[in-house]
Amino acid sequence: MEPNNDVALDIIITNVVAVFRTRCHLNLRTIALEGSNVIYKPEVGKVLMKLRKPRITASIWSSGKIICTGATSEEEAKLGSRRLARCLQKLGFKVKFTDFKVVNVLAVCTMPFQIHLIEFTKNNRPIASYEPELHPAASYRIKNLRATVQIFSTGSITVTGPNVQYVANAVEQIYPLLFECRKMLR
Image (cartoon, rainbow, N blue to C red; front, side, top):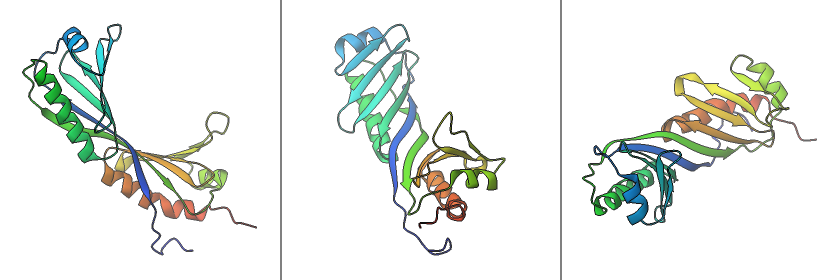
């Protein structure tokens, strides 16, 4: 297997974080008393609301800012956000769905080989860091893609980036570096 051959890697998106605004003030107490599937956290000043389909959890602030987590695609995040805005409208708020933005995507991918983390870190010293006493993975930052890759010796990697395309590009960019440091089977 050579790094220039096309290798099909499955990139599984596990979490998409999206933000949107309602352009109106939200009474958290009203949402907590009249809404369904809500948890009121007055000490933090927010309400957590959960939707079953799509399965997302939203953090709602009185300013009208809402953060949705738990979606497995950008489309699902948008659908869940719009459904959440509709729930707030049904509670009597004059909600306008605006400023929707996907801010973070978390994905996992498994390489078809194991990785020698110490060798990988030495080869990519300023960008990669590995501290086995603190965390079992090596960390690799790709500045131009604003992505962070956590590399485990088993060949499993976790990629965090601003959107799905950047995550895919990060996996594509790091594959040849990982291939150089693969563990040879005896």
